[in-house]
Structures are given as C-alpha cells and as structure tokens.
Image 1 (tube, rainbow, N blue to C red):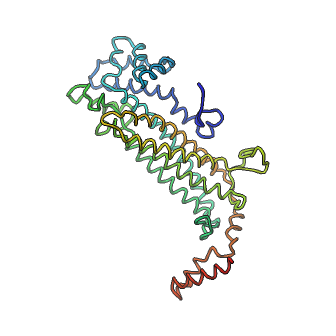
Image 2: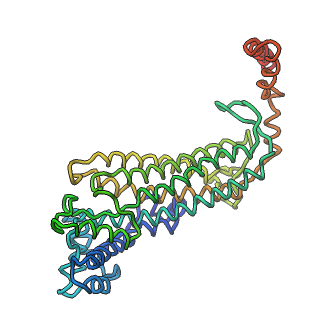
Image 3: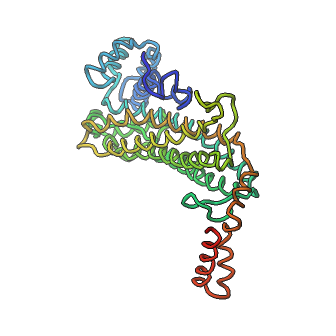
Length: 402
C-alpha cells in the first residue's frame, strides 16, 4: 500500500509520530476493534437474555482480524460507503449458521464504528497520558535545576524584567499540568459506549427496557461509560477530545517557539540536544537547526486544523449526520498521531536541552541595567508618586538608549 503523508511515509513518519500511536490508529487495529465491538455486543445481548445462551462464545471463537479478506472488505466499503455491512458479511461466513444470524443484532453501522473509535480513543488517551507525564517530569526537574539561573524576561521580543530560566520552565510546566487534569476529566466524560440502533431509540430491541440493559452491559464489557442517551448526533465529546489534543499542541508550540528564538545565534541561550548531523544543512556546514522545535511548531498548526474539522462535524442534521460525521474519520487519527509525535519530540528536546547560563547572564546585562528600570521607578515613586517617577525614569532610559 502506498504511503503519502508525513504520518505514514518512511521518510517522515517517525519524525511526526511514533510506531505505537500509528499502530493504535492503523487500519488493522480499527477493523480489529470493529470485530471486538460486534463480539462484545453479542455478549451483552446474551447476558441480558436477548439472544440465545452460548451464541456470543461461538461468535467470538470464530471471529478474528486475521481472517479478513482485505480486498473484499475494501471493495464492499467502497460500494456501500461504510465498512460494516461487508464486515458483518465476512463474520457471518466464519460463524456457524445457527449463531451467525445474531451478529450485529439490533445495531446500526454507526454504533459499531463509534464503538471502534471509542476503543481507539481510549488506547490513544493512555499513550498521550504517558507522554504528558514524561514531559511533566522533565519540566519539573528543569524548573528546580534552573530556579536560580538568571536571564532576561522578554515582552514583545524586548527586554522587560529579569526572570530565571527555572521560572520560564515553570510556566511551561503549569500548562501541561492543567492538560493532565483535563485528561482525567476526559476519561470520565468522553469515553462513552454507543448503542442506539437505526435512529438512536433502541427500537430494534422492542418496547421493553432490553435496549437500555444491553447498552449498560456493553459499556461494562468494553470499559466505557454508559451515557444517559444515545449520542449519534451529539458529537461534543469527540470534539472535546480533539480540541484537548489541540490544546496540548498549542502549549508545546509555545515551548517550541521560545526554544527556537532562544537558540538563535544572537541569543545563544539554549540548544537542542546534540546528535551528529541532526539539524545539519546540506549547504552550510555550520548550521544546527532546532529540528524538534520546528516539528512541534508545525504539528501545533496541524492539530488546530483537526480541531476545526471536528467542530464542523458537530453541526449534523436530524438523527443521522449526512456528511459531518465523516470529518471525524479524518481528524481523529491525525490528531492523536500529531500530538504524540509532538510530545515525543518535546521530551527529547527538553530532557537533553543544552542551557548556556553564561549567555543568559550576558544577555541580561547587555542593556546596562535598563532591564531593572521598573524597580527604580517603583522605588522613586515612594517619594514623587508613580506617574512622575515613570516620566523621570522614562527620560533617563531614553537618554541612556540614545
């Protein structure tokens, strides 16, 4: 199969992602989770007495992704527009006739596809959580190590007040800690079971409460939350997950931008870890480009684009979206691969970051004391008032600069 994007080509895929997260959202993994969803549904229905005892075990024993006829499945998906009809046909051909008729019992295509996506998201969130924790640990160590390393604080790219590099690391850290909190909330709020049937009403299982009981049991089997009502066309949870990933990308993008500017020759305050030929130029031998930061910055914009897609996907028509749902199919894998790739690059860059404390001190002193003008103004204000003190120090600073 031809690879065409930065997330799947041999040239770029390990720069923009990791093997682990790619496998989580691979085609094989997705189809495997579709099968898992069908088997879990059969088990839930058997447990609630909706289908005959022993049916689920037979279905599960005969169902495995290794049996998939991929060309046939692809052809059927192309014709139908969705993969579930073709999948159910193949599963029915594996399972004895007495039990095969109970595959996909009472379900609709979106039930199974949403369940597979939720299982992928659940696995993906666990990977993201691990990478966030690693980056948080790195920044905690850096905040402590450099808490007394002075440098220039800059606003609008100009000297503002003295800070420490540990303080800067602490600001970076604070955002990631909030993301770690958000992640826990997402696990509670957004990992939902999906089972509603054709229009979300569970009418296929009759007028009793069989549908509700099956859905609750299905949630328990798959380790998902049981929602108060079907969410076929209430896609806020998917949008929240992807926008959460975009928020992580934004925080990492800010770190990357700071590192890129600080690593410029004129500042020379930090450098990404040295690896022979990493960031090398094909024409300028002296170059050592901040590759990890560049990738993180690019991915922050890729993530923002995916966030926009799923927000558009929330605006769906009536009881089954005629198009907006498809946006999620494109956005979810890209968002997860991008954010894990960014976290991987960030932890590499930060854990081995070369910090030039001497350059930080020299840059701090380069404006010959002007960087403490606020402190002078505030002390003078005790005697002449703040506004007059500001004018006096402003004039003195202008004379000094001129």
